[in-house]
Image (cartoon, rainbow, N blue to C red):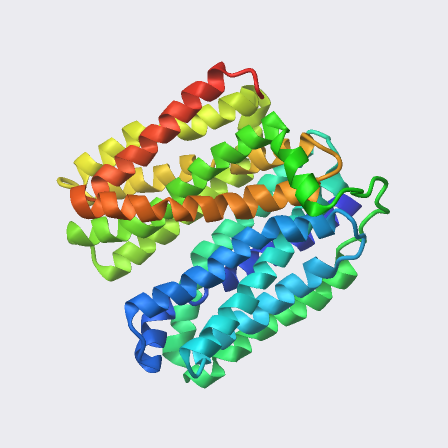
Length: 384
């Protein structure tokens, strides 16, 4: 097996498991809150702290990754997530739960920047880089989508004290990856500036910043759908099981789209990929909101299509952002995968107020309209 193939296989498998651990507690939060006797507000705060800190810290760990040729973050990232996320289910109080989520999501922040930098190191700047990044991101998204079903099944079948045995999968895989994934090549150009100076230099990189803006919109779209669609489906009489299934299929469709996106990129290039990803969303969301009143089946099909399109350009955008520099690949990976997610998550605050006043339908149309405008601007701009 070629070096780059081994690297992509091992890192993508690790990403599938890592993002699975990131989502493993999502369906169990109500059970945890009931057992610990904490309210929704406290639970939401605990979750927000863990996920936000993880996203914000990714550029920092990306900066460190740019200057080391040890697979430290790859190994300990998966190890931390596999140990502490399952431990969160058996936490004895809210403080312990917060610590578990922080350490578990810290593993997530460790893993992403260094590993995506490693993929670029394996594939350099050849045409297969977008395919490799798409496969990596796609498998992670599918792992994130399927994990809640697996964790729910285990929680129902076994005593909650035994839930920690799920950690064994990630622990074993962490050590397997040390032997299977090729070592990082010697770093030819180490970063000679401090983190703040590096960030300033990246902010002057107009193509990179434009792609980061595009990714913020993607993050806001994904977060909005993940948050508001279940409420909307419940409003129109979908069962809890069907809501869970549709949310899973939404993310699985997105994972598949990232895996196949490089095939479209051959013909559409970067601008065309962004347009293909964002332009259909506004009409699709309107069609979804209209059809849900008359046909649950048709509305479900449209929702899955939205999942396919909303993540279609994610891998291509990350690959092109990495190509904008040779010095700060790790930091840029952390910005595109982590910091933009944090910013997109923060947009849920004003969207929440809008949804409260005017309905979640207005929020979905509004964010799709922003994506529509962004795609039109992308086609006209000379920045990328």
